[in-house]
Image 1 (tube, rainbow, N blue to C red):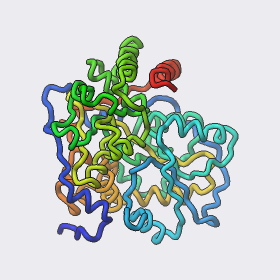
Image 2 (tube, rainbow, N blue to C red; image 1 turned 180 degrees about the vertical axis):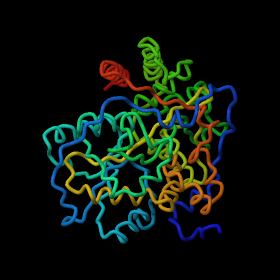
Image 3 (cartoon, rainbow, N blue to C red; image 1 turned 45 degrees about the vertical axis):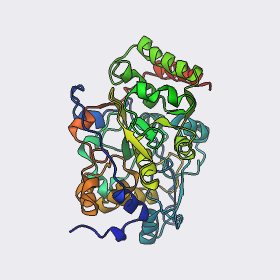
Amino acid sequence: MKKDINSISPEARAIIRAQVSRRSVLAGVGAVSAAGLLAACGTGSSTGAEAIVDVSDTEKIVRWANWPLYLDFNEDTKVYPTLAAFEKQSGLKVTYTEDIDDNNTFYGKVQGQLSIGTDIGYDIVTPTDWMAARFIEQGYAQKLDAANIPNKSNIRSVLADVGYDKGRQYSLTWQSGFAGFGWNTKKLPKGVRTMDQLFAPANKGKIVVLSELRDTIGVIMLYQGVDPSSNFTEDQYMNAIDFLKGKIKDGFIRQVKGNSYSEDLKRGDANAVIGWSGDIFILKAESDGQFDFAIPESGGTLWSDNMLIPSTSTHKKNAETLMNYYYEPEVAAEVAAYVNYICPVEAAQPALEKIDPALGNSPFIFPDAATLAKVKVFRSLSADEATKFQTAFDEAIGN
């Protein structure tokens, strides 16, 4: 039976009632398997952090750093419904903060403390694949105790064995999503589906792009006919950098930001963005359809964010209890109904279909092969490439 809509959070209900439009699938994009895309990842060996004293039995707390707009939230009560239910069920107090706006910025804040074994103030962090790989490689993540996370078996099969963390010994996917075009439907009623439409004269000074190199540059490279998942050359990468620099110099791009780009859209300072799918769908639901998202016709990027327990956490068991909770299908379904990102829990699809069939069949939450054929995962970079490419990107955006 269909689940009573009043039994879930107001935000989930808002999204269910919103008419989330889905673009028709484009033909002719290179065929890529769903498994190949979602399982794409960084390289490098996994080295665990040294064991530390876990005080979970005496300190009933969990501290979680996540990205903005990334958990079901009740605007009226200012409560995260699934988190409140977890606290009541487990007896643990959760400090949840939206402290991650950009991978590099967050890493820069905590790396020094991690390197000397000082508590960074978090028991769970949620970095993107390539940064999760860095945490693991540097020994900044604790190995998970599978006995405390029996719901780990619910992970989508294509996410269960990624290259940077074979067998998911150190991480669990939080959500996955797409980078593409978001826009204000009142200002741009015809939408934005091509780079030419994004950089139309009417949008000059009204465009924000992501500070995540792999998403902004990945989308530009695809526009230029270069596959960012391939062994592209330095010249091909620098061509995308030159394109970005040109659009900044010409005054089309007003800012380069992390998650806070959503505020530019809400304030009306931006007409369009290179942004993330779930963020835009949340804005759409909250604004009666004033915003929308599309994977560019030339292609978008695919990424995953992952829950890790930092090497300095002394509440490991509590953190694992929280991870396990969010891998319960009914809980994962409610989160997916709010965030509209790709859900990592295999069994959540029928659970979400009980909430609303349209959401349960959304290609933005449970993408089919045709949708995944339109996106690419930015390939792993060597240490030299990572330094050189990040420096070029930072210089291009004025950092």
